[in-house]
Image (cartoon, rainbow, N blue to C red; front, side, top):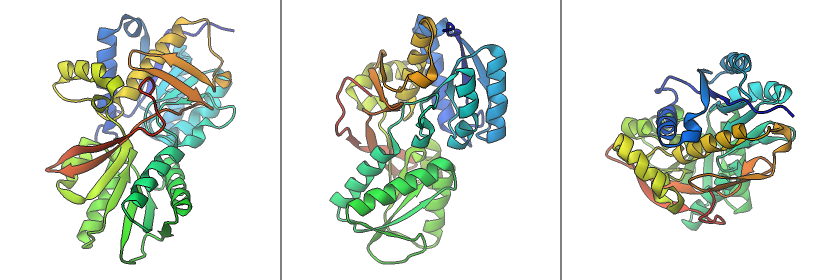
Length: 329
């Protein structure tokens, strides 16, 4: 088996308006390269995949020319799906630290996914709704691979809890809404509902937990977001969060812990004898923040958070860690 190259590909959108979590990614990378010698020893090759199929294929070609056999990024599930088969053929491992479709980890996939499985987020979200007495749920999504898959998982979980799932245009009273999509699409959805005079509770997911969404929407007492738990709210993330605050004078973004872990996983693999991406489904890695354990290529021990919006800021309300230990993320 060939030795893994110390060159790591980074596929990410450079447009921070379209991909606000990219800012957290780059800040976490800068911190890790300056504070951890084994990260600093790596050579990074960067490509803007534009969040599209075409951009992802161009990025993959660039990484192949550079000799990268580990790639971090492809934050869009549609972009990631476009290159999965190519990475499988070239023996390239793809680490996904942000919210992406669980289907990317299908059998034979060269993917390790650090965010929680979609079915876990769906189950926790619906359990929260059920515990608060909601019996009717409207589900809508952005027309992307991840949006459609997570929306379907939420609808399935709702049915298991006896919650009726309505069409997006159903105006039945006593209903709450869930929208699955990017920060920009989620903000559009909330503002559209606001303009229509809608005051029913709206729950957003994953990527919506960003400062850009909070600034755009402002106060919204009827809106909650269920997504990544932030590093500073987890015992295992406290030291990393303190370092981040020293560097940037603000708390890390919601996908910083997963990004940090992905960088250390990449460093471990690059220093080892080699890796066969298609044989790495059940594996664990020790990182400075936690032991990361994968089952069927998915990180099974993850935490979620519930956020509210106030005065243009995200406000942490609750952390959900059911079934997770404090030694894993």
